[in-house]
Image 1 (cartoon, rainbow, N blue to C red):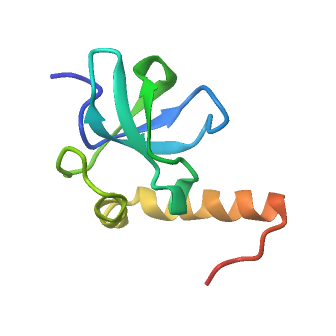
Image 2: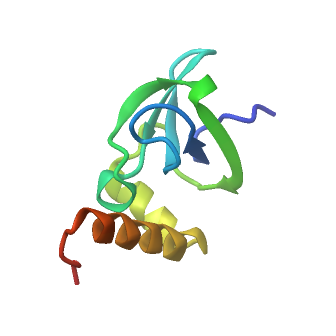
Length: 102
């Protein structure tokens, strides 16, 4: 069973989005995967990255390969992690001086 698989929730450890959560939506090769945040929730846009820049978390979502951001967001809403991600988003917006969204 591979550790990095479609639906696996991970933390980025490199780049401008380091420390943020993301979800693997497609395995491109043995070294690269396509991830998404989705951007509205975590600030991580959909992109291809090296698996060395990810730390897998024990949470796996039931999504299909190449799932849209809306489907990923709906799957995240069903987990306990969603509330934590909302709190992280509010902290980021507060630091940057952005108004709260309701």
